[in-house]
Length: 413
Image 1: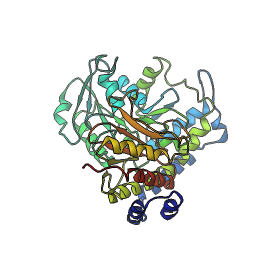
Image 2: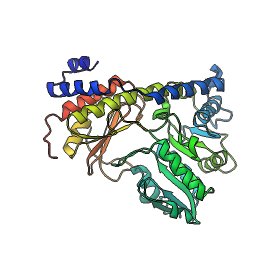
Image 3: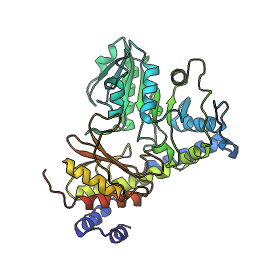
Image 4: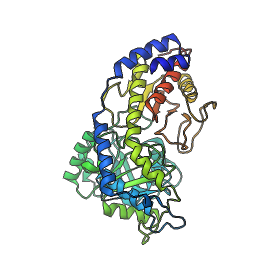
């Protein structure tokens, strides 16, 4: 396939040779967790007893929406959770996370992040943007990953511990489920009353277990990332303990309305079918990212994760070292997109982000990062974050074209 792609898209000799070496390094990489994830999702569908009439949706208030009820029940099964809230009215992962935090950490109480500075849009909502949560009276502190946090648990005002599973826009590693299990056990041993809230964006279905299987009280994320399987048209989710979901529903809708509202507007089949396909799409993404990691390492760039290393999310960091190379990478990647391939990304301001950002995306669902895309904030150490890929071959093509686009860029590092 690499030879076919290189020939069909006129990849130059230097990149072609690096691609051959890269593919040889990763072609036999196994993904044992994905086999178990696929089995778990199949079991959830069969145990749930999904029927064709479950695809029917509703309009208006959305009372008794069969698609919503079946889909949320499926999510709860897959996450090993009491309940799930998956709604079109949760418009993004950031929206879902902030909704959960606001519900679980009232004014006068404190949120403690133990994985460092959160992703840009979330950090903005917590402490920087107008009307942020800190301005509303919530206390907030953050510690770097692996920094001792036990002493912080003695704060009587501490209401919740926050964990961001993926790296976000930061030169830090993503945290796997084994790390989560150890951290959650330490929190609950000392403060069983403190809630554990996990930003699960980009991590769903990558490992066999989810954070809720190892002690998280709530997990939150977007339905147009991993779980959407490239089919969900919009939405976000929150899953976990029943009492915590009740608090979130009261915050998101209104006290007394609970979670009884929320139409699916005819999108029930897309949500449910997308969830069924999601494990396969995630596996394809991982294969494509492993090739990209190997290719750019062969070309002399630092990458994380390393090719063939265990993964806990669908994000590949590539350290390019300059604004010029970030721009070249994104513009070349855009030429691989099935939608808007003739567009030319340029750096600029993006709502929710402090620094200018350059993004490349051409998805069938707007902003769906389970489809191939990249993001790069224009700040040191000038890393690009490559993510998604509906098929491994498409992710491979994107990596090849991005690498070719860098060939004329001067190296300064």
